[in-house]
Every structure is written in C-alpha cells, then in structure tokens.
Length: 485
Image (cartoon, rainbow, N blue to C red; front, side, top):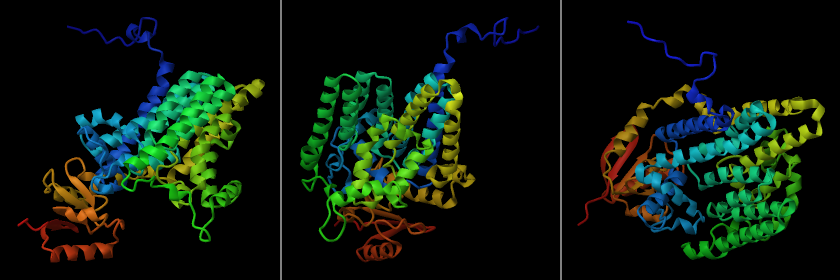
C-alpha cells in the first residue's frame, strides 16, 4: 500500500491554493514585530528569573495594576502606605493591563505587556519603509529601532508606563507623514493617559497638523494637548498626591546661587550639541544611528517636548542614555529617518535605491556597534540562560513566606513577591517597620535603599526587637516578627 506524497505546491510549482490569498509582503512588518516580541519577552523574563528586576520600578507598577485588578485605586505601598500612584504620575493607561493580569497575576504579565508594546511600534515604521523604499529598507529600519539603545535600556530596567507611548507615537508619526491627519490625532490623543508631560507632545503633533494639514483640527489638538498636561500637572496630580503638589517641579527649579537657573540651562542647550557633556552624549547617541539624517525631517519636531524637559531638568538621571527615558524618542527618530530617506530618494531619482543604501547600511552598522554598550548585550552571554544555585536558594526561601503576608524585602526580591503579598522596601520608607516578615539577600546587596553596612545594622536592630531567624542560607536571610501579644 502506497501513500501519496504531501503536496506543498500546485502542479506548476505555485503555492497551495490555501496560501494563494496571503499577501506575504504585508506579513513582513508583523513578522519582524513578532520576532522582536519573542526576543524582548525572553530577555525580560530571564532578567526577572535571575533576580535582576527591582521593586523600584517593576514592583511599584505591579502593585498599581494589582490594585486596579481588585477594583481599587492604584495604591503602591512601596511608595508609602496607601500611596495613590495617580498622585505620582498620571498614567491611567495601566488599566489596559488589568484583563491580562487577571489571567496571569504576576510581574511577568507587565514584562510581557511591555515587550508587546515595544515590538508593536515596529509595524507602522517598517510597513511605511517597505511601501516607500522596499523590503530591505523595512528590515534595516526595523533592526535600527528594534535593537536601538533606547529600547534596550528600557527592557533592561524593569517595566515603565511609557512603553505604551512607543506604538502610539509610531502610528501617529507615520500617519503625519502620510497626511492621514485624523488618524494621527486619534493615535496621539491617548498619550495624555500615559504620562502628564505627553500632552505637550500631543500639542506639537497638533501644531504639525495645523502647519501641513487642516488648520482647525490641528489647533484643536494643540489646545487639548496643552490643557490635558495643565489639568494633570496643576489639578489632578496635586489632588491625589500625599504632598498635595506635583512631586517633580523641583527638577526644573533651582536654588539661587547654588546651581544653574532655568534660563541658564535653556541657553546652554545649543552648546550640548557640540560638547562632550552628558547631554551632548544623549544627543549624539540619539542621532548617530540615523547618521544624523533624522534631523532633515520635520517629524523630528515631535521629539522636542521630551528632549526639552530632559535637557532643562537639573536631575542628571534625565540627561543620559540609561533607564527608560529615551524609549519615547526612538519611534520618532526612526520615523524621521524613513521620512528623510524618502525625501532623499525623491531628490535623487536617477540614483534609484542606491540613494538610500549607504544610509541604511550605515544605520545597521552603527546599531551593531552600539549594541554591546547597552543592556540587551546580556542576551549574548551563555550564563544569562542559566540560573545559579544562589538564585534557586532565594526562590526556595521566598516560597516559605505565606501569601497575603506583609513583607519587607530587598529591592531585587520585591518583584518576586508583589503578586501575592503586601511588600515594602527593606529600609525605606518608614512603613516597612510594619512588616511581619523580612527577607534580604546579604550575599548580593544592591546598595539601595540601604548599603551593606546599613543592612547589617538594621538586621541587628530587628533581632534585638525580637525578630527571629526562620531561614539563613547562602546569605539569604528570612526573619519573622515577634508574635503579637
């Protein structure tokens, strides 16, 4: 008895009938996004499994999402007992994660959500590049954005609400370039729910619409963007903050005679473009992956509000390339890059695709050279995929803590517990002293909020107060509060 071979094509070598209706070119952007999602998800979950995530900030955001999932305000005990996170930053967009968190309540849900959001931004940018410049250009631009240092620094540092801004900005800026004005405004509007400063970005998008498209729609968008940020900064955040004020005004204010004032910092911005200051390095790393070509596109104007508050701030954390602050800029920069390439090809029609090949190749080469300097490079280390005996010990000790308990934990242990316990940072703020359990990894102290010496002093104090040792293994210490009378 013989069996007929499986037919993978028609008699003429064409694809099977069930595949003939598929537009393979249309799948390219989604395939690229799926590949980046898989990489980001693996990277984030491995960092979490290796205890490299922290209470500040993954634990804080999980506490907020967990509160939402219980139909409560987004309270984050890590910021203080009863602390409403809507009084810290205005980010009700976190509600979008609640359905997924109800299915899988854990920090991993936030990490996977962030991976999906960052990967989704690949779709509009690469699809536009494919349509205008070809499939090779789409791949090159996707690699530039997907492996950009701004995205890498974000997935290398826990979870942050600004991940929602990446796809919204990518779709909005591409819609601006394609003169789809209503779509651009529709994609931009939800940015007001991501973070309080992004209303100003919406206003700039409105200004672009008023400049290049329907003036009335643009002006209305400008006004709504400014009003949204003003309402959030001046009314909503102070109303929900324990301090009854916006907590970050002092990042722009200066004490007379002690540090540069706002006007002085404003005047110094042009100098950062040509100097080796930290701010200058930020601008260099931002523009060099596009070989400075992004500056030739008016779409780059959308980046001005975010760049502005960062360069004008007196907080040095905002000036550099670390953490998550630059992820908002990445889709704007690479959309501006595509726009500039399209303009270049139109200006040199006799060169054809060769007008853009050097820039696309150079962008990929620069991205590859920068890759080892930022957190995603950890993925190339074989040890990144193995859990040490110490990690397994930590996980074993944490399993001894009952669900529902009040726990003070070291910063790297916090997000391992926030899905099932009320968790505080060991050593800060004062509410941590109400904990029933204390767990710290003295073998691998993070140095914040307490250094190793301070940790030792606090542990000694707890023992004098009657806390007893439940487990102590490989530097992992679990203490239990004295029984209530």
